Length: 381
Image (tube, rainbow, N blue to C red):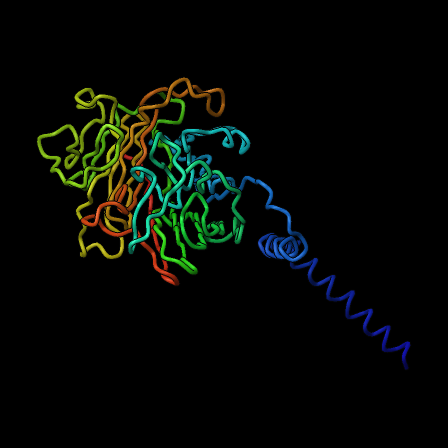
């Protein structure tokens, strides 16, 4: 009788193993989840750096969990010819020495905080400066320089999807409180790329302002500069800055200035009226009629016919024309120079922690921070 019981248990065990093998062989997503869970349960080592591809129809993107970075976005032009339209490097390792923030998820607080400090409820927090006396994009060891966990990866799903997570400890770069952060990249119907950034403060009030820092050149990452690109930005004001690019706290209308992109026109048409180029936060014209997301900007490359329309739920967008790029060696042997791309980083306002008249970026314990961007790609003749 005991022998029969052992035999039955053995058979059930073999059947279970066979069933799991069958499921994972036909469903790589289940295999990924099981293997990922196994690694989480049996390994305390740091996550490995990997490259992950999402593809749907004629759009594909590659991302790495180093900095939760977008490495490539491949899109067709008006003739169906494919090209990679974001600047970057060939290997994830190349991003470890990056000073450009190519494609990275930046935080805990994107953009600049003047004097690398702020005061909240009577307590002054000193942060770690990395741009003179100021702090930029979260400091020397911001979110763009850490290895994120891969929580979910569904490359075969109807809407291919990947989600990264990171646990930011209390005191990291001087910021208070433990913070759980997640970012998800998803290709959705109609050649759209969804980027969803969320965070939860666990124990202390902390500033959170995440941004996606991809450099776009719709003609192709190695096609020259973007000065002929037509751009429209749905923001009628900017937050002017001082010589260190720290906001003054004032608002200025863009009309009759080089910053006016209320009507679409070429980036290069007025760029010479500025010392180096565009690097400014626009106050977006928010409309409740459009739902949770507002239209931020439209970019058109006439030669390729590619069009990118950006929607988001944040009050500002940093328009940057890669002014500081100089002989930067990128992927495929490309060398990037000034104005080789443009960035449109939706965000809370820069240095908001030091300007009570700006929308707050503070997140209280157990509150959720949510930042959603939607890139709509198309072509025109």
